[in-house]
Amino acid sequence: MMRHMSALSDIFDDVYGYCYDMATKRDLLHDYDWLLQGPLRHRFIPDYFLVSTVGSSWWVRLLNGMSVSMGRVSMGYYVMRRFIMLMYDVQVSYARHIGIDSDEIDDMVSTRDWLLTRLVRVQRSINGWCLIELFLFAVQWMSRVCDDCGFETMDMASIKADLNNGALRVLQASHWEWLTSEQRFYQLLSASSYANWLDIVVPNMMSNQAAYFSHIDGILRGEGSCNDGLLQFLTDRPRRILYKCDNAGEVIFDLCMIQYLIHMGHSVNIVAKQSPILNDVTVEDVHALIHEQAIFSDIRRAFHDGRCCVIVANSFAMVGKYLPLVTQQYKDAYAWSDLVWLKGQGNFQTMPLFNHYRAQYTNNYRKRLYISFVLKSSVVADCLKQVSNDVRLGHPFQRLI
Image 1 (cartoon, rainbow, N blue to C red):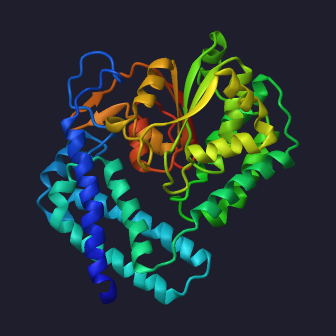
Image 2: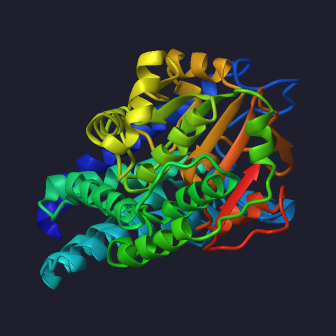
């Protein structure tokens, strides 16, 4: 690792400084009237937790706050370590998947140990970050370490193309036909939700993707069902929907869902990323799929009719979205909409129903929300238990709120 030492220090300073500045800007912003309604009795944060307030109950959050000066044995450090370990687990899984030499993998893992030691020195500062800011730090760190230290970088363009092509093959194999029926609606709803497994941060996603596609194929050939009130909401009258996409592969089934919504008479603004991050879909990705794939011809027509467009939430690469620094285009689209459709844990986590300090505070949004993803995190599960008794890790979750 010695040959990487100076590079690691520079990378840390750059990435930490970027996320520190982001958290500082967030602390200075207090105008969320465009987003929330009613009196705000707390300081809104764009996540369920700060690092120092993670906990499933008020007393666990109290213990977290009390442990901030305990270094490596504090709860905050445990949270930081989990995020860093996740990103390295993903990178190591990819390296093994493509046959990278074990010595190079060991060399890369040694940079993780350097980082975990270095984080102790800035732990007090990071305790004030949202979880999404910490996750962005972990993502950017991993990317820079691979680029600057010469480790094998994920070929994300190829990974995304393979996922999209795999999803399109599922549609072709199921002899897909556009039918407007309750069964078809629920098939698409279930398929798009289950497809949230196609997330690069899911351990062993690449080796398991064939099984995921096989399961989705079964969904599209099955009955499909859901009892969350969404269909009734959508059949009452034409709606204006702000649909936030998540991952490559998954986006194919999202676009099928969006095209079905257009068939129902609704208008849809699709939200994608400004620039690449992980295997999240970008505006460029969505435009290419809509214009190159014949199956999405009705979305193309909706573009020309002014009933559909693609926008960004942030002008920079971001996991989920970052509400303190959204674009004016996004604010206008939010004001226009009467339903915000959140795909994926990242989009759910960064539009929190609650903010947790020692107490829990409810965020009252101006718009109704529909959430749809596979539940992969115990932290997210704890949040969902506030709104549902049917919360199971490893299963899709869908709910109109």
